[in-house]
Image (tube, rainbow, N blue to C red):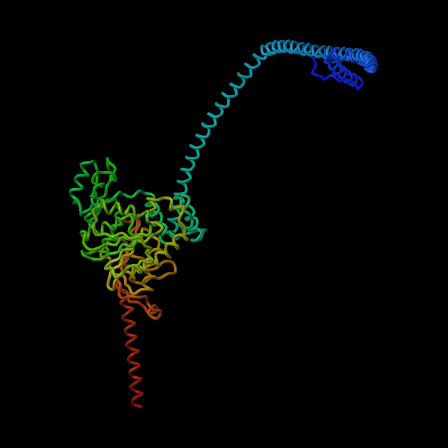
Length: 558
């Protein structure tokens, strides 16, 4: 059945209302009693007749209304049947479609099965083709790897032959420079070619190579570069606060260590050639019986010559190798102020001081350039200044490519400021030792010359014979004649890390005035030529003095 509402015309509605009124009137008539019927008047009978007529007319209308309603009901029934027939037809169509779809699906499945059966050999062929392609790719990769390895081997061989050719060319250029038979080329062209070959063979940048070539002759330069590539021997310093050198040597030999003494100039140094145990993890090392330290770093402490019960400043102390050596020579007497600007580096300083049994040290964290504002009047000051490390290239080969001339000049400026503050921290008549692990002239002789020009100090003998004398000339620069009292350590000469150290004595406080700077300073060590020149100058001065006296006498006589 449909859910549509039945719609009636206005006439049917009016007939329904009249029919409802008649029903109401019938109910009223029936409720009346029989007594009322007997007492009815003629008027009421007439009214009854009228009412009956009206009832008859109403009945006719009702019959018409019922007929119309029956017709409408029949129409509605017909519409509902039509709707039901439509719905049944739609359901039948849907059922037919579902059945058709099922049949189509079955047909499609059958067709897919047929297609799959037909495509199976094709898929197998594709899989085989893909497998063949993968195998071919793998074979190609293997062939490429083999060819690449062969090319690498060929390149290595060519590289070796090229290096050998470069080295042969270097030797030829050095021989021609020695013989001074340049041929078609000039000396400058040969030197430039030599620099290029040395840069490619040893891996230096051109800026650093030009700096080294200005310091060394060509043959010595090659020896210096070879020494920088060779590893330095491991050296240790015996801590006499805890043990003796003989006892430590015996225990290390028992542990499978092959060692020997560093030299006659030190009583606490040992060279280690071979070891079956790690030198930095033995019980003796952990208990502070020795310190891993390069032999060249012994020298500034020996030049400082600290005495017992003195007040000493180590301006750049970390990691503590030189500080612990000073405490060892002082036998834990007096006071050592170990200063460093880096808090991270001071951790290693604390550890080494405790491990080595140092008890007379105070650790501070100040900028060395501002330390004179903190405290002064030290008996001795050690300044192992921060540097570019051009003397320890064997330990850090990255210096070859990284360091340039601008880095050298930056460190030189910092070193000049530090050496002035170190001199200001020292008392009058005190000792200052300046050292670096660099072979650059700008970080060594230039800095010392700056200190001599700006403070009342003089260079004195270090008391050690280890090392070459300092340079008196470099390029267009001339240094004070006493600069030869400083010492230079070269790797190719002394088989130690490159190093520089010098000893200064403070004469007076304060900076030098400009008038005093211009006056010539007398050297401490006089050569024969210098003595002859001084005698000649003295004779000239005496002759001028005599002439002046004679002129004065003649004037008085007149």
